[in-house]
Length: 539
Picture (tube, rainbow, N blue to C red):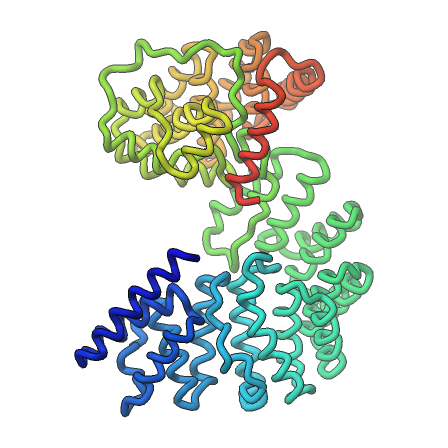
């Protein structure tokens, strides 16, 4: 915050100097910079009011262009409000809040002025509020809610002036629940549903009840919404998710299976169905089929996080496990010739991270390593570079130094998947290199190469039998290796289309080592690594 204030003061000083010289466009540029750093600073708004005295109200100094700077957009919003057109300025301010919700763009007097709520067309305000809701998340992160509360104040003023506008009440309810105001959300949604019963009104009411932890009322409202539109399968998914979250898995599966019978290709039903069936029985097949669906349907109506939610914090599905102490040091021969360039090291450092949403996301994230030659990737696998001198690198060095080397090897192996990708898998160079790495010993390189192969099986169904056979052999060979057996077993549990008996054997190895662990990682380090994962994932 101190840095932002200093930057704002510098821009403000330069804006004043430019204005004294008559260089109004330069002054406007610096003023836009200042408002981006400190949007509620009174001195900025005083100078902005000077520009507002120009014949055009200063608007031409802050043009709306494609990819406009956020400070320019916000400055224009304030000038529109000063010109008596706050209803035109508000959408710009909301756009800025949608861009960076945690910044106090709306903490200015004209937004909270009761007169604005009374004069704005309630239908227009409802649409603006719904746009804001779409951008800020449900619920909005607690740390940024204070910056959004001026909009809720505006809605309160508008509802007081237009108490019978159902759309405004519903949109206001959606905003209130995102900001943790569950009681207000229920009150407005219930009032809107009484005034104008509809599918949307019942959905708003159902969500409001759910945010207030009034689950029976929430489910009743969502069921009424189904009666309005039996073909809207997103409501079935919401009902199923709510039931599952409150311990009624059988009822949840019945609802989502009804939806899938109606339309097996509906994106909401498919995502929710696979997630809930995976929660019910733990069968990896549900997640693999969900990944296949996402690959085959890139133009879904909206983004879903079901796959990432199911993979979260699971070894290899979303993270590099803590490094076992038992495996021998990595091999250096015969696959290493030469050293990687500084550019190759830097590219690896930019992409390597101990966490990813799910295997297909890790595959996609490694695509930039196609610019690193395979020989250099092999050298990076054999001799991982030091961790980068950045926030993530320093955290890894402090909490689990061995984890960085494992990350580097994992991502370099993923990078090999993107070389010669036009070659059919069975005879490809990328397969040959990774199989050589995966079978040339039993060590950390084995794990990294196996993970790359398993990841490729997630993204290419034709490679699944081949990868499953290789993982099965490696599991048998690693079974007696202290430390490594658990990690390879976890890799097996992440492998698509693995035979049932192999999956059961892998699960038994994991369970046995967790019950009777071989010497691996000191307990204190394990606790630190857990805290590190939570910090890296933003929890």
